[in-house]
Length: 144
Image (cartoon, rainbow, N blue to C red; front, side, top):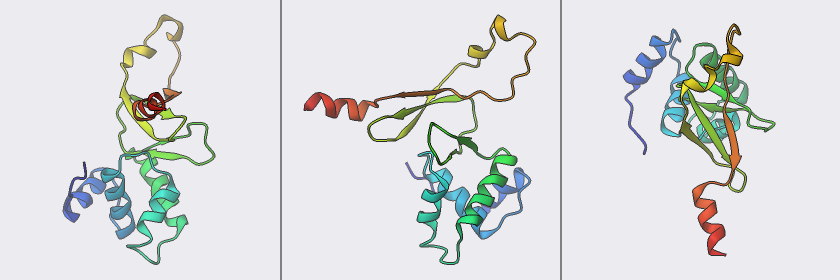
């Protein structure tokens, strides 16, 4: 479901994350908020080039790098050459469908890392990625 955000809401979001708003940053943020599909930088670039003809891929990469530094997005590797970006920065897991390639979020309890074997360790990052077949593709396979 696409939500409509005003320019002011997008600017405020960036400012709350200590990011100076610019046209490119606002457009990338708006795309991420409205397209929670774990896009690549190229996905974002291909979408925005129609709105911003002077846009460069470097600008998109630099914006995403800044967003990662400021905690606006997380990067996902998911056994791919190109990173994907996730605007949902809360603790959760991902399932990547081996057929359609879509990535789905699913809830995970933070208790998963609170185990005796990890006592005394400093955990900086947790990635929970599952690979399989999504419901939609599984249903299609049953029809064949």
